Length: 212
Image (cartoon, rainbow, N blue to C red; front, top):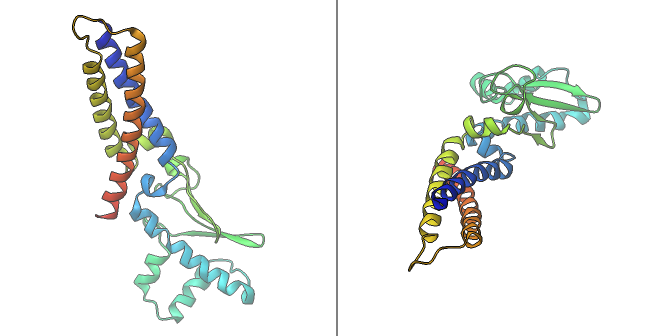
């Protein structure tokens, strides 16, 4: 009777630990949370910031981005290119404000509204560091680019590991497996399954998003 209970507990523990480990290790990587398309599109802020930094020694920072747009026009950029450059991945214009001796560029994120937390927060860039918001655990598990893959891998890992433990803990030749050995085996299988599951999730997500 103990074996099925421990097998179920092992599967549940592996599922929870896989999700938590993935959140802690991958939530700080925007490619995993927002996707490579969003990360690629936000590089436009670097182009805008480069123009701001280039013109600052001569003219200071402008009061709005219109001056930068005008410099793009003078360089021969089409209206379509300018619109794409100054628009975030969700179709909203990038925001700009002066901050003392510097500036702040930011996207209002997927909601298009100020404020918000996690995936709904603003993506900020000050010309040096891109500040990506960290998703909450629930957002990471159900609303990110990696969600479906992570849940699938966690389920497969937990069920497979529980089955492996169940088979390995089966008494042989009439000998009963001690509780200490059973739990030791469960702990080993759990740690191994979590490490492999998180690694496979990260590799699969990066490969799928890169198009390879």
